[in-house]
Amino acid sequence: MTKSRDDSREDREDVKQSRHDPGRRKFLKGVGIAGAGAAIADHLWTEAEAKSATPETLSGTVKVVLDVNGQKREAQVEPRTTLLNTLRNHLEPAVTGPKLVCDVGTCGACTVLLDDKPVYSCLVLAVDAANRKITTVEGLGTPESPNAVQSAFVENDALMCGFCTPGFVTTISAYLKKHPNPSLAEVREACKGNFCRCGTYPRVFEAALAAAKGNQA
Ligand code: FES
Ligand code: FES
Image 1 (cartoon, helix red, strand yellow):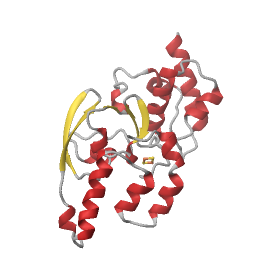
Image 2 (image 1 turned 180 degrees about the vertical axis):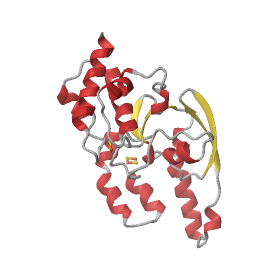
Image 3 (image 1 turned 90 degrees about the vertical axis):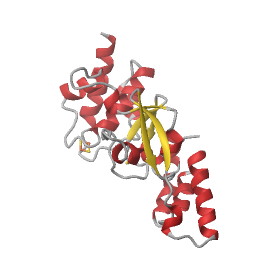
Image 4 (image 1 turned 60 degrees about the vertical axis):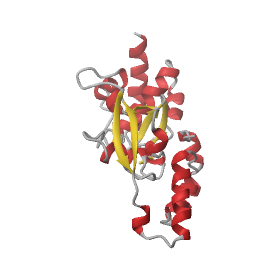
């Protein structure tokens, strides 16, 4: 089962500790990823350890079929490959809306919706996302037909460098679907898993509230 972003945040301390150990097995344990991907990876490691592994023994790949923004997309990846890495580097054309920043589940720049729920795609294995509905910022709207949150971000000038923006837009879009009339405090709480290093928070929150109003008009 894939962890939600709230669960993921609780695991951060473990993840921080695992940063000092480059071993993938400890990393997987650190983030607590369960399911097929972790099982395959653990199996590979167990075998590899028994045979004093060389890089070649871990070089296998598997085919995954991902449902990205309503399209079936195929990729050939190692079992340990994250969903974020797969979207950005193993699809042709690539899906680059979700951004790689911390890669350890702390910043939210990589946020995508998995079955309509925000997750950090840097903490989800691609093999665990197979046959599930993946929505990235590209799937929320287009430049010609943006959704309310995307429009509000433009109108409220809610970005500086823009690197965090896809994550915020994705998080807020999912939140407003469930909570159409939030207060400022609720919007701030909803965005607690997304960091903006440029400090554009006030405009981000204004945009979220404007989008909520626009949706109701
Ligand atoms: S890149 Fe995934 S949370 Fe930062
Ligand atoms: S606008 Fe630069 S990190 Fe948020």
